[in-house]
Amino acid sequence: MKLWGGRFTKETNELVNQFNASIRFDQRFYQEDINGSIAHVTMLTKQHILTEKERDIIISALKDILTEIENGSLIIDDSYEDIHSFVEAHLIERTNEIGKKLHTGRSRNDQVALDMKLYTKKEIELLDGLLKELLSTLLSLMKKHIKTYMPGFTHLQKAQPITLAHHLGAYFEMLKRDHFRLVDIYARMNYSPLGSGALAGTTYPLDREYTAELLGFAGATLNSMDSVSDRDYLIELLSAMSTIMMHLSRFSEEIIIWNTNEYKFVELDDAYSTGSSIMPQKKNPDIAELVRGKTGRVYGALISLLTTMKGLPLAYNKDMQEDKELTFDAIDTTKGCLQLFIGMLSTIKFNEHAMELSAKNGFTNATDAADYLVNHGVPFRDAHGIIGRLVLSCIEKKKSIDEMSLQELKEISPVFESDIYDVINLETCVEKRLTLGAPSQKAMEQVIFINEKFLEEYHLS
Ligand code: ARG
Image (cartoon, rainbow, N blue to C red; front, side):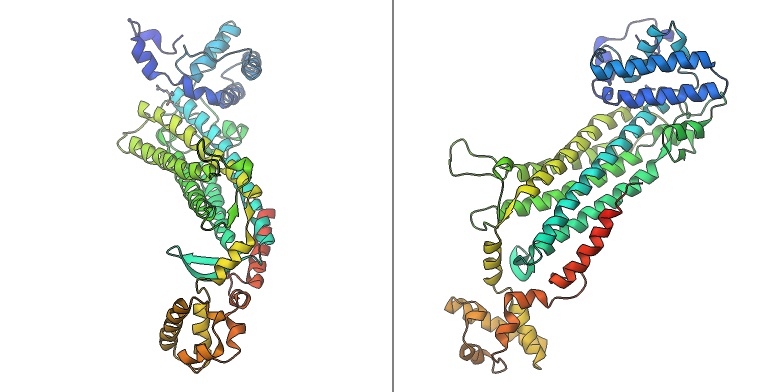
């Protein structure tokens, strides 16, 4: 059955039917479609456009349809153009045609805008819940590893010593910003387009604020043309998900590096790694690689929708139907990656010994040795040159700075005294970095406290 057969004299070409139809993918918001219709009918009755009897018949049939789809006794069949036609056809069939009044004062344009918004709101809530779980996982790891020393890198070269808590804390801040992005998007999109009609509102005395309230929106949108053709909120969500994926991808890259034989900083749990069909020794970080790989897919959805929207005149155009598959795929992908990441991180083993050893080798304390000279009156630029020569000499002798004898140190600069060893030992190097946001235990405890509070008060709206 079609909702628009009246002015046509010929059957639609079968390929056109298939090309045009969206039921294959928009059936996933059957629930939102039915709930939107229930709100619409409730409002039509309050406004004396439908009778109470008509309302009760329609709502009861809609509820039956919902239950039957849910328990599998009503199968959504592909012969309908979209989920809206499917639900309406079944409603009409079951209500002795009273269901034909449901669409009074409504267009599929505001209907689909509503359904997609309701669906997106629900999915943002789920995404945000997963973000919270990942943040909690990170915070417990941070508490556990506040004294786990490791090298910090720039250019993937060992730079200065930090702790694992500090390194993980960087991802905590990234994901925290991701949460606030979702908060913003949610608040901005939280207005109902229902009642905007095809593009120019309607002549029926609809109460749009009432349906908005029934459906849990903060209010109703203010321009009917914009309401049916706004896809900004999807673009914003795709952008936020792209950023989440970019963060997960960077983290994945580190896990992949840390998992190599050369680093051995981590061991992935058997349940979260895979083997090779030919090389028995292998334990591959496939999950991290897939997360990194799938990032491109989510970016693709963002660029795709931006491109779809860029040339569209007001108001609704069928191009907009393209928003669905790519948004659904991006949401599924991002949620899936977050879920797997939580599992991978909560089972991963950190090789504290290898991390500490790596921090000790590689001259991560060279800056601190230079600072020692500065504190003894040497200008920083000279100190930098002296420590450069010291490192060169260490490399020749295959020693770390703290393995050099005082005699050897004095040959490079007479300023060195025996207290240098205290200054450049790994623990001191980290623990004297006390500025807010720095890796020392003291500074980290401050940040962990702030972030604990943040998690306690975590909310989307
Ligand atoms: N399947 C369409 C979409 O996803 C529903 C809206 C159809 N409206 C129309 N005037 N053809 O955008």
